[in-house]
Amino acid sequence: MEQPVHPFAELFKQLGLPAEIAAIDRFIAAHAPLAADVVLADASFWSPAQATFLREEILEDADWAEIIDHLNLALRADTAAQ
Image (cartoon, rainbow, N blue to C red):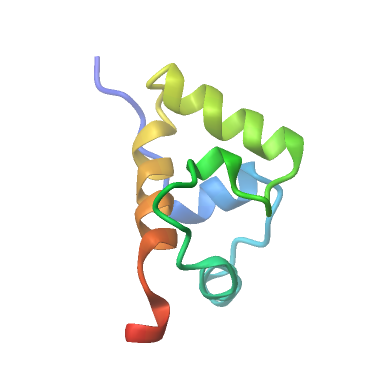
């Protein structure tokens, strides 16, 4: 059975964040680059509920894990270099 694939914007909705492309771009620009030694779920900008969701979905390798990895990579990019 193939796992469902969630669009990037759907993750932002799940986290209770604005999910429009411009809002996602602003969020990433405001929080990137995330230091290499910081686990995504431990970043200071998450609420406790958001951090728990991110942590649990990755640990369980749930259907959200792939798109959370995408967010993790986006936040690790050096936006100033773009």
